[in-house]
Length: 329
Image 1 (tube, rainbow, N blue to C red):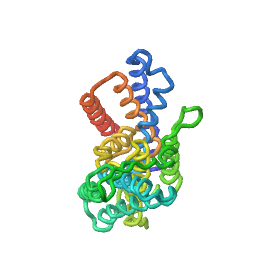
Image 2 (tube, rainbow, N blue to C red):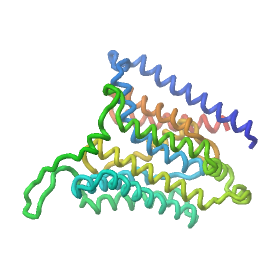
Image 3 (cartoon, rainbow, N blue to C red):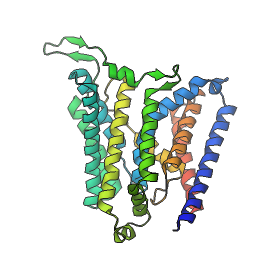
Image 4 (spheres, one colour):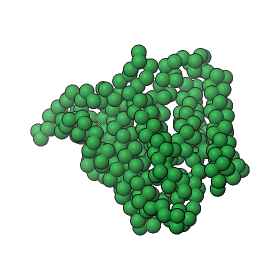
């Protein structure tokens, strides 16, 4: 595929994603919940709520453009969430060290998936499904199935209440007059890193080439195994950052956190226009997908639509987005 044709195709998908976002915004204007949609706090909260999912979607995009999938992101998020809480609350570890260790753990788990997919040639669905199960079990094992909070029990059975570490309060704090949360800033920073890697770095072009035709990419000298491995490792690192943010927002580490988050992250990537078949996509498209899903969830929430309805509507939109991609192809 020539560069001009690829650019025109991507422009077309961007236009479709923008139209979809405008339709969602229009729905918010029509179904504004007695003016709630027009309040600044609604948009601030929407950005805060989509941030954790958005961080996961940043890593997911790099995996999907290779033609892969990562079903383990929610479980790795849970591992990071409980580890960060253990390190910070129970072990009184320095915040910087706790964050670094959690990112290393997330990267290591992602690297295992990358090894299975790129090195051992397992199907991404099977490899990451196995990692999803393993990581969830690991999160429950290291916590004994209990949430990690400021409430501790000593050897005599006495309850001890520890002070919540300041790093939790900082990550969940607001700046600019309370109009922007630190979690949202972290999401935007992760998005910027992913955008630079995919759109401006040689590695990003390699990932897209692999997704387009892996054998052709290999014959042209692209290190297919290493590039695919790094994509899953990067996804694991994004999961760790999302897990840290999740723990800070909930003021605890929950081994059940992140359940079904992988579906939302995949939906954000696909609805934006990135192809599940690989070879086509970008962070700009993912950003639009994040906004579409995030605002749709917020509009349904302020209109008191039950969770069952929100899930069904989101599922319908995912199917519609995939059908639109197929028609465009």
